[in-house]
Length: 210
Length: 210
Image (cartoon, rainbow over the protein chains, first blue to last red):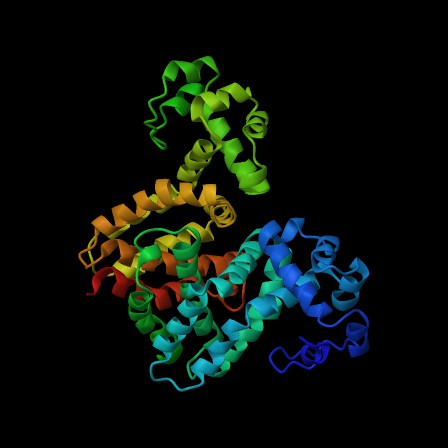
């Protein structure tokens, strides 16, 4: 891995306004290491017990560098969340393929993100933090959901598109909680395709019907 | 308030098999006071930080009495949850009125429980604990949801009634989380009747259609 790849990576474009020279000065990929450490810390300790100092320690950098990149704990959390939600950002693209079958496509992408343990863990951590700490809920609401839902709503041709997008999101979030967290049966062990089959018409109605 | 009312209260019938004389010996309503204190402690401190000793202190009783009534922290949590979910136990009765309009009735009862701050707080506390602690999730899954969902499923005439009941529950739980916890707009300030109107056909389909 080279530092140059990290800084200008087209995979994770960042426009934070932080000078690139600082990242170079503190070693290649320091920012990414901090974010990775932050995700782990928030997931394992929860929002409350995670500290800037603890994130710095886990990332092997000075605490001042974490402050330099992110300012506050809320800012690190928002950036860590953003990374966690990157898979979900596929959703607007999926919706952009047109109204036919939109419900099924959305259900399949969403279930896919949750079926993949690599993406499920971080999303669970976000959900848990948001449910237990108002600061984390605010970050989820203002940084992530707003942007994601706005992009989904922009693809819809229905009255109250944001409200419709939220109804669809609420159903998928509730399924995630009962299936992956509370693990109620039979939902927890139902074949994902059966869930898609049942849920798709609901999402289709919310996203396309008057 | 008189002790006699508390013990034999028809509002909250209990069949725990604990001898009534013990309750009398430790003061009228001690068990109810302990449960009330437990609900507050779990809600304020979360599952992890709540202790038997802390519950006893808040209830103004000896810790040994809490152990006597409930055995373990999980047992107190289950009993506290049970009380919190009493409003939700209206659901099977509502469903029992027949398939026509079942979706709308269910949506209205559920939203009603969450719109009422007195019942919303305890249910939120349960959800938060279940999302952050496996022990609490297990209690929710095995004690409460199983019984509630079984009763709902028993009223349904569809294939996989438990799965259907869980799909309906997942939607309502997801709406609760986005509306009352994360508070995304416009969902958070939408008129409850508008939510009922949109959600009712979804629940109707899950609970009555093949």
